[in-house]
Image 1 (cartoon, one colour):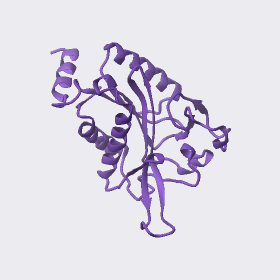
Image 2 (cartoon, rainbow, N blue to C red):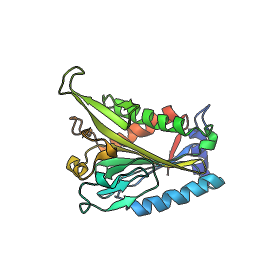
Image 3 (tube, rainbow, N blue to C red):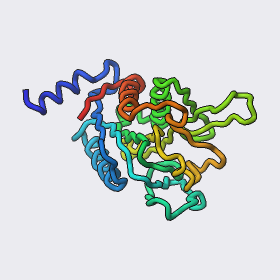
Image 4 (cartoon, rainbow, N blue to C red):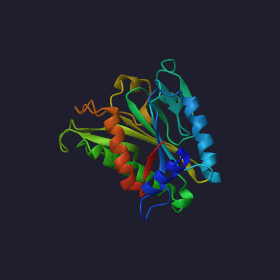
Amino acid sequence: MNAATDKAAKRARAAAPGGSGAAVDWRISDRPVAYPDAVRFMEGRVDEIFRGAAPEMVWLLEHPPLYTAGTSADDAELLDPGRFPVFRTGRGGRYTYHGPGQRVAYVMLDLRKRNNDVRGFVRDLEQWVIRALARFNVIGERHDDRVGIWVRRGAPHNPASRDDKIAAIGVRVRRWVTYHGVAINLEPDLDHFTGIVPCGIEGAGVTSLWDLGITATMPELDSALMATFADVFGVGVVRV
């Protein structure tokens, strides 16, 4: 059996019964990826997925320290313009930070296989992150009035309690194919978030698994993401 035939066989075995079709390619980059290079790759892959020339994909990576500005970004929310490179991007949302210790998951799926439901896709992204965090006994929550996944710090009725953001979500859809995705804080330098108003939410905190006392490794987080992706999206994954 040649390599191409073997990969096709693995993909067929990984496809989940009752799901949306063939398994999703799962790519993990071991070194930081420059943001423009990642965007170029995603745009090319989105076009291939639209044409049926390549399978859907989830790409896990880290970026060097940088800020991105989504389509709703307000310049006043960039508090330290010279600190890190700033990239204007077509994803939804406002300013966010990417850097070492943060797992970025770029999700390239064909919504034509999923009833063209953008809102449903975003809900699935949220549920995916929540389930992955639950593997580490972290309760992640979504809120209707703010984007991302949040962790409650302190007792609910304590005046000092607060919600801290542990994961950001920002997506773009081109011809019904998604890209960009989620960013989960494993152990980034949380001080790097002080150069922006994260996602435009004043007074909200930022946290990470390590900040919560959970010293998980990046491979452990990746394993949790892979296992829960199949549960939420109803399709298997194949490492490429």
